[in-house]
Length: 476
Image (cartoon, rainbow, N blue to C red; front, side):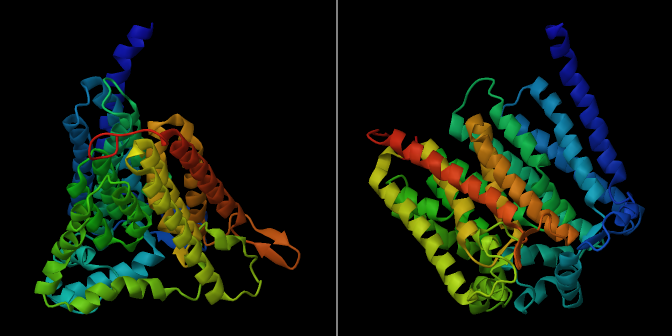
């Protein structure tokens, strides 16, 4: 009976996956979910009617089918067997179908920012408009927006499909990261689990395909960079890290890890010097088009100061423990948070210096988890989306070692609940405290628990590594 099921399950999953994938291709753009607005009244976005015409829907569907094919091709490239590919066709097809269902959702962020920026590019010569002040993204994402302005595909679909491409690349990065953590094992299913789960992780689906955000871009590059450095391929990892930073400032949450690896003598200083060169390459086209260097270099400072009047923008951070309505010195509270984040990074750097070459892959991954959870948890002015990298890395961590599942569940749960606050424009659970109340205390408590768990694991990893002498250039 068991052998019979083993023969039946792969082709069955393959057929169901093909049905889902073809369904995504057929349904893309055509699905009218405006009836859901009855359940989402007052939310931050709306399920609008289908945009464009038949050819726009066909093109969008074709892109989703191609993305599904790309996902399976990447798995095949990594040596995945036929039966495993057939089984994974089901989550891949389902992931694309989910994204097809989200295409017509129009978020407030899209209409307020991206739609206006795209129209600016369209009205001002496409790539020529990059020289002018538009948007608050760095140069690489502006290249994409400028390119989109030349096409007739509805802007909403183009933005979401671009993010969906990096969803696939993120899943591939998760596969490689888990394999790097566990080593190449014959028949190991953990990397495959990471690939499938990252594609259907709720915050990944909601971020790009529903919300129209692009956090999957920097996250995918960061995950690949981490996988490469664990394999001892330091220069390519630094190049990808620089590319991630050129897309999103939130890369700084993970960047101290490379400093720790340098102190531990796992990465050479001259290899780190590739970072500014790689970053320069990403902004050269903008410079050639006439965009001032000062404007490019100042974009992240502008972002940092844009919401300085709010300690948290629905992020499950430490500031959610401050009761709403309580008068606090926001400037002082922000400085304390910045100092706390700096202290956390400093402690990790000192631990890496103390441990030196004894620091192995397990310790590196635990340190990465502490950074991507702890830094945004302590910093002020964080958005609800800023734990996206934590969600992805903790999932990979859990796939590599099931004992790390609590970190993944807690981080994803806190992030997803924070997404719901924005999407619904309604707090999930308000806790009264006399004349005050906590509006996101439970979400912050869950993220704090994820941070505490990760710190405890890191302490155990450092204790295990103590006295261990490693060989080779990269983390062993």
